Image 1 (tube, helix red, strand yellow):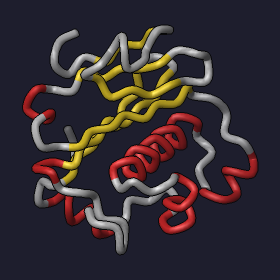
Image 2 (spheres, helix red, strand yellow):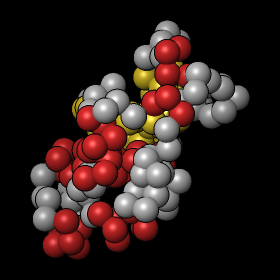
Image 3 (cartoon, rainbow, N blue to C red):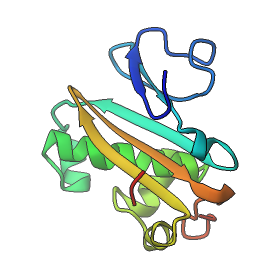
Image 4 (cartoon, rainbow, N blue to C red):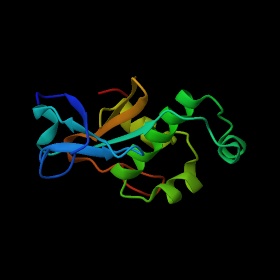
Amino acid sequence: MRDGDVVRAADVNATTFPDAARSYLADGTGLAWHVPERLREGARFVIDAEIVAPVRASLVRRFGVDDPVEFAGAWTRAEALAKLADVPIITWLSRHGLAVPADVLEDAAVGRVAWRTEVRGDVVMTRAAALSGAKLRDSGVVGGAL
């Protein structure tokens, strides 16, 4: 793997991809993001991914998003930011829903946190990093594009 590569494979784990951020998919495969060298030192990095699927009616009612790609993008972004904040996704969703909180947007504006959400085939993924050792804030939790 080269810096920045994302690989989808059945054998994604800490042994096969030790220097990668990893996310696991519903079909039993996983994604491994070989984090660029410039982000590895003094930064926290995560990846979250979902296979695009129809959005359940209960989630449409709760979050108001019915487009599968748009929903998966918002969901993986929320998951990635929650991981950076060391907050369970259920807690993150109860506080913020799928929106990016204002304090996180402020951190992004000054380069303390960055993320990128993209579609690759049937998968939507968000890669995120808290740069310069910053810990993501979550409206009381300390806290763009990669």
